[in-house]
Length: 82
Image (cartoon, rainbow, N blue to C red; front, side, top):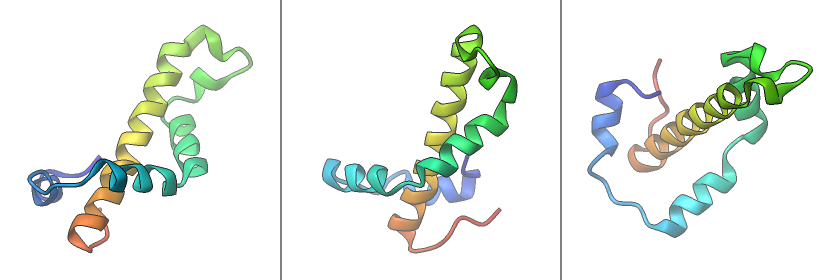
């Protein structure tokens, strides 16, 4: 997730639904799934349904992280600095 100074740079800027859809479409979904797996590998073992809540949380947070980074880049013109 973005750190507070970076989040503050984009939180008051406006973005249209169409722009948001385009950003979502262009996210690196393979990287998102890899990040979700890395967050909690036990949720993705032989029977992922045993931990479906953990797996879905991992995907959700990985998507939010990627989306925040993409929005930051689009709205500020800068890459996220770790």
